[in-house]
Length: 475
Image (cartoon, rainbow, N blue to C red; front, side, top):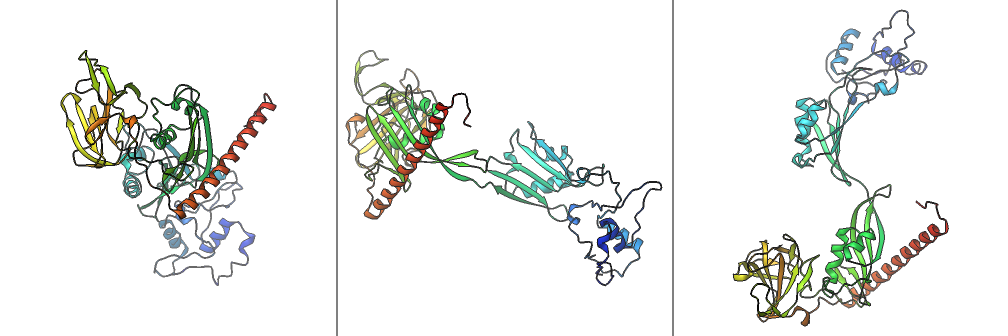
């Protein structure tokens, strides 16, 4: 049966009535008022929000029963979870709006626990979590995460109906949104990503004690420092070459939200490092690093296969700290705390990964027919013999196994299986850009230099404004 207002002659005169009276007239339902009050029938409330979208001027009842009398029709509408009621003029929108609850994940909570504790029926909770698994693993829930639950209000001043939506931030960039589907215990989950904007940032500073400390002073993220060290490590030994007074400048990307709040960092686009009066500038291009002439900085081996360590012993004859006599030291030692990651100095194949005499836990990598590198006294080995490794891949951790006085990395470079001083060898360079690539690279360099100049100018203007107006905030 299709029940509509068409042909009933009510469309033309309904505008002079309140909405509730109009609906009552259409349905043939008498709206009750309390004797002695001036209560006005001025709103229609619905127990299920999905019914809220019905058009009282074109209401369809989806069943095939014959036209029913008003009382029967009223009961059928109630069965469809539609509630007609009268409101006093004092009832406000807040009392009729949805109920929104915010809950925090506590230690030991499962998502089911949290939902049920905050008023979600157990059947709905299981169905909601089942839909969540399509976009998020519920086991990844973390203490302190907040969720927002929405319930419809059954009646003014009354309780809530079944949960209709669930929202939770996964991180600063992603959010889960789950909505009830129809009137059944069924939910649909989606992952919503914030739209972020790319912004360029310039950081610079003077190195006084370490690059990490100078970077922190310049508000350069630690992750950027690690990314900065790798391309320069082919030419700069960060344990021996860096001195107080050296400088750096870094152009990098950061992604910000609509309020300008930094959400995450992007790539380092260019960097300059002034070491001992020598200025080195590198540009990122085609997922590699190049000097201003277009030559790749990538070489066969890194100068230093460990970050943040100090050189404790160089290559050559020395008095052995345990044996007590002079002995040739056929490598270099880097002091670092136990567990500090050790990187493969270059691409290659692991020849040995096992305990090796006084070297303790030991790894040797063959990079080509000429070069090999070895790493000793490790606390942990992450690779196995025969495994291929990439330059910069973590192969183990610093330790003090074997004949050792304390945690450190003993590092060797071998040329035709003979240990040599790592500082004395000339390593082959990486790829050279072809003519077409070189043209694009030069365009990239020109664009980067313009961006750096603009950011320097903006920073200088801000500094000048701050200096010329003491006591006045420029934020």
